[in-house]
Amino acid sequence: MSEQIDIRKSGGVLIRDRKFLIVRPYGKDIFLAPGGKLESDETATQALVREMIEEVQLEINETTLEKLGTFYALAAGNESKKLEMTVFIIHDFTGEPIPSSEIEEMRWINTESTGFQLGSIFEHDVMPLLKQKDLID
Image 1 (cartoon, rainbow, N blue to C red):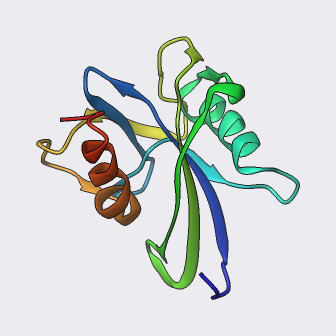
Image 2: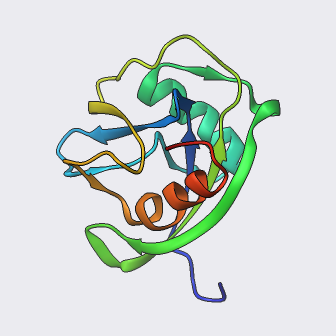
């Protein structure tokens, strides 16, 4: 994408029982996979390691991350900003996901799940790709 990128984020996909984990931050209507904005000196994987601890209290093994892809969209709630999100499948982690003070709700979903609004990258790019790879139902 040759356009200016305003926001760079990293997202992590945890899969269990053919479903993947999504979270909804406090004060937001949209669910996303855990992750967040890259700080100025971070790589996408470093940001994901930090964000997984901050959001769902999980330590992940950075060396086992599998890059699912880099996706682009307009930022939800601020459509004048362009978002780049690098998404990784997390294969190795320690602990159970527990929502932090930043996270109001967590859910395990698949393509048959309903009753929530999913961020556009996860709805239009990530979920179909996970289904195509036969990782989720």
